[in-house]
Amino acid sequence: MEKDELILAIDQGTTSSRAIVFNKKSKIVSTSQMEFGLICPKSGWVEQNIYEIWATVFETVKEVLTNEKVDPTLIKAIGITNQRETTVLWDKTTGEPVYNAIVWQSRQSQDICEDWINKGYSKLIQDKTGLLINPYFSASKVKWIFDNVPGVLEKALKGEILFGTIDTYLVWKLTKGAKHVTDYSNASRTMMFNINTLRWDEELLDLYGIPKCILPQVVNSNENLGVATRLKEINNNLDIPICSIIGDQQASLFGQCCFNKGDVKSTYGTGCFMLMNTTNSIVKSKNGLLTTIAWGVNGEVEYALEGSVFVAGSAIQWLRDGMRLFEKSKDCEKYSRVVDGSDGVYVVPAFVGLGTPYWDNDARGAVFGLTRATKKEHFVNATVESIAYQAKDVMEVMKEEACTGIKSIGVDGGASANNYLMQFQADILNCKILRPTCLETTALGAAYLAGLTSGVYSSKEELVKYHTIEQIFVANMSEEKRSKLYTGWKKAVEATRIFKI
Ligand code: ADP
Image (cartoon, rainbow, N blue to C red; front, side, top):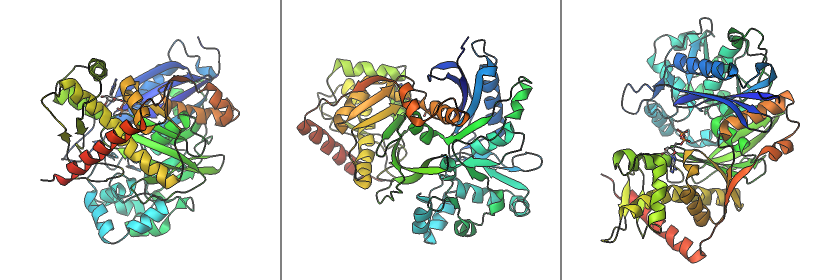
């Protein structure tokens, strides 16, 4: 059994909930994960049952707390990280949700967003929130519920309804309704929060028709929110305080110890999310990056630039399930050992359009450069390389807009296990790729923040000591080759975007 101080991280994601107990040296002591279903009532709509989310969180927490390796009395704090933007409204008295949680991916509020764009709100909204009008963010989801679920707006106006992203809901449940809060990082994804004044923006709320009384109090990402009394149902002696809340991408930035201006992390999961810490500067993007709050720590808010690639690891799933080229995602690596590179083949996996910097919803996937000599291995390698090219597209914009070079990038997520991808990423970006020992950086970020709040750690500098790197990938490609390959990619994207049916 671990004798050291422990921290419990709750990582509430889009398809599963996870609870992880870390020791002080950021080693995993116990972990539990449960998947849950998505509800897709119509094409493009993605919803979740909030009871199921809560049940999976509670069960995974129970499992790790009752694990024989864990002495629950050594757990000093709970950190919560969550899928961002996903929206839930519930009755303040009964706790009943008024509708399913509407997931970040859902497009059901597209018409509302188009209406706001047509009314000319885009610049105002970007100036105040750092975001581009899109169904992705919470505001239009709230409005959709008001427009589509009878009686909710009336009850909201009477102060009987609460809004939350998933962090807010979990804290409310864990504290038995004592706290209705969110942190700066999550608030900055709602399209209702002014990232300049650090307050809910009354002018925007008026434009949207959303009453302020439903919104949670915004707190630091490292804040002691009191004991999670609900956990006494597991063990009556448990008096563990909730000591951090942070959105998942920002949590991974923190977990990678990207504390300095210009530090970048890239998460290679289903999609690819890149964040650059811009510390106290609010960098407004002209090229499709989002400006967001990284975290608020001890009352000081820091900012980040964010870019999203919609299809990354899911392109490998497509090779696996759609093209049926192999059985497991990790099998794609063996193709890179059979042939060298992609021999001029480019795959542009624009299956659901293209994200940063193109924001082209209508683009669809394409393959270029086939010859009689093309082998299936080239095609697989080209698909893997497409992930790295898309990340480079985002990095190029980040470098330009933040006026800084990028010397190294911290990586995580399922596809970061792929050595060919990581080496190609280093080569094409001409920078170092740092793969940490602990790839659960999202949960770790929440744990680090909770540890700072509860005194397990004394400073961010101390955390850097525990952040160990498993492998460094160093660029090993001539500038000539890099430039030729990337020029080919840009042409492939351009050609892809021309083809619209
Ligand atoms: P998410 O959190 O978005 O569900 P994960 O971080 O769990 O994603 O990563 C899963 C993704 O990583 C899948 O899309 C899978 O295809 C991809 N993946 C896993 N292993 C590899 C690998 N060795 N090479 C390339 N892609 C991989």
